[in-house]
Length: 367
Image (cartoon, rainbow, N blue to C red; front, side, top):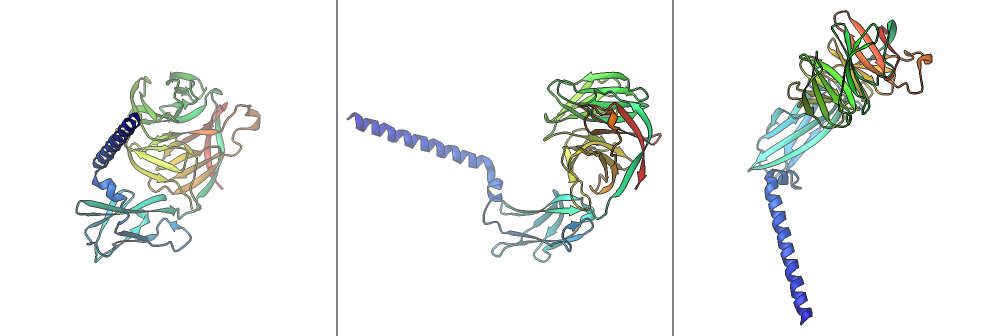
């Protein structure tokens, strides 16, 4: 008898648990909504075809034919073609193709997507293509014009020049600072320590505010330019390495070939592109400086700066800074080249490195 009661209780429990599980799954499906369910429907009627490149790779300036069709059995309602999340064309049964001029885009990876909305259902198809630059970069070396003292304890992560002074961000957890430095002597005139749990990275000046990013914490900080008083904070996804501005947008790197373009008041990402030359991506982009319509970026672990177009992502030039710091200035903890600043009024270009004893004013010399 006890055994029968035990079996009955067990059966009731199983039925109850399964009922709860079923209710939970139903609730989840209802909450997900119809769109998410249909996007992954195996019966997707869309086909997306992208014309192959005439050469080995897609090249900036190519015109690429993109075709979107609806399979038989489905009405060809409105099909929207978007490129990099921007609608560019409406495809119809009579006109299923669109020719994309890649000059209207950028180098690196682009997302091509078609979308069909029918009877409250949404179907999508995507393809990714990669566009290489159509130009071989120019090559430059350097000439040293002046040498200045640099704090050998400064693990330089960001640098800019304004009103006769250098503004520098240093890194490492527990040691990260933002500081104002006298160019001629290297003397630190003003310094602000950021939270000890944050590894400070690049800085830039926008609208009389210093904007700083951090490495892995996804946290940005905004300071008053004169007092260094913290005015605001913001968050972002991924790592932060370098940052600069053209006075309209912020440009931020994360150590890859990718550059994010941010709206400077809300810090929302408005565009993302990758930096490419005619052979491929330029990875390890680090500290940035905006100079006369181009962005100059340190390439992490290399004594080289890349100059690229912030509108297209195309590499315009490489600057070889090999051996700029003499070997007798190296110590066991001397780190890599990092830090670019530009005196716009006097057309002076400065570079330094992490834990370097010197900062250099250089002139670029074409090879």
